[in-house]
Image (cartoon, rainbow, N blue to C red; front, side, top):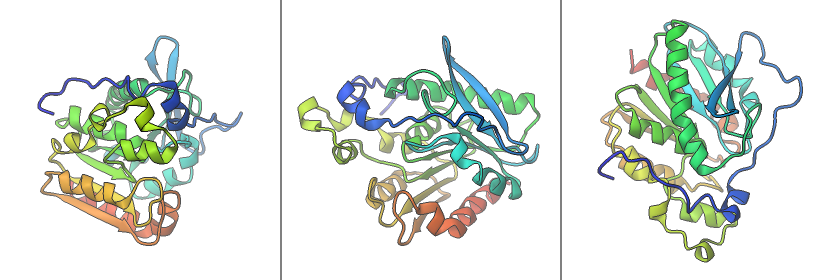
Length: 266
């Protein structure tokens, strides 16, 4: 990938792919933001908004813009937000169309378009509210697509990148999810280009992956790490963990690795 022309995702936005790729769920009625957290609505298209929940701790603290995994919503991170706040970190998880309090319908093209709008919204929101610390983009699982897209597109505006349970290749992931990739004629070149994207980001980078991830193989995390050109990159393996219990099994090491990355930005 020699330029920064936005990719097209028509090959992934076929009904037989979308049925397996996205699993949106709504926020429970009355599930309001806890404590000092703030709910925000981000306009991404005409009459379409994406929800976010900003857990803010300190005006000078680092800011993590977080894109969560599939089947998750920002409310799932209500316990993690205060943990980050205790570390002096401002934690800003955001949803996708159709997830949580968001409106609209999720598609790959919409997700990849919306992450740019969300990024700009978050940047200006932080500036307007005088949060002046470094900006880190982080993506878990499906969210790695948004995080790597932004790191590729705006390296001068992003201070660090964190990828947790991220995928390097699309074709085997679609196959695992139940998509007949041969029937739809999908080729890897029509996917997200994650290895090409991470090759352009040279700032501090942290890759976290479960040893026994049953959805996105550990080798994908290794491939992303190997492709990263950053002189300040780290790879954390969470022993014994799978895709869904990675944080529970590795919380101490996970948070320590994030803290080490943030310390390097001071």
